[in-house]
Image (cartoon, rainbow, N blue to C red; front, side):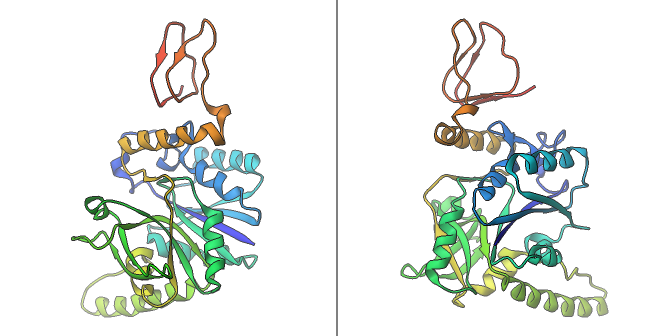
Length: 309
């Protein structure tokens, strides 16, 4: 049995996405005609043993989020729940805080993915990759390649080319480390919580020391990238599955346009019904367009257009 966790952040995050996130939460902003999160959920729901999808973040559960969850559950016939953090706990702190919910039902493994990524989501391949390594205690990072300059903006992975083991991990290095970067999509077994728990206990000890010196630290704030992956690298537990399929972050307003273009290209094979078509006497489209509003006569939509009410 499998589960998936999607980390959606909160209103204090994703400021580079403004002004697009003023009217709608960033994870629900339409990318290629559907909410950003829907691409993740659809990919997860296609896995035969997927039991439940959990969204973790610190947005207030408003009507818009509740409506999306209700519709997604009906469309994909799978349990989808939102778990609200009491504060921003980091990529590792959130899943550790809700570990009992994630482990309920005893899943063999679970995916963790950032909401603000655009991908073909090679989840079946990641599962096969983990099985090939034959270690129930191993964890998998989805990786791809970038040029030397681009790599400085991501978590960088040094691998053993024969075994795919992660030997060294650095988050956003100041100098070039590797052209293999972290895609923000992971496959964990329940044993990951032992490693996160070790960091949590250390943070608690550090917090006590800082309090004695009038300092402050929140023990629950844990980052998978800096706190967990860096420590696991070179220990024979962390591996990278490299993909040559499309992938991109969706951090800024402009990157949402690029992500839409990538998904629209994919729609020819995955969702041809979502692409606009030309009709005799009607408006013309050039290239791949998603239309969600009325387009009048004598209008023309250019390549990779997404239109909404």
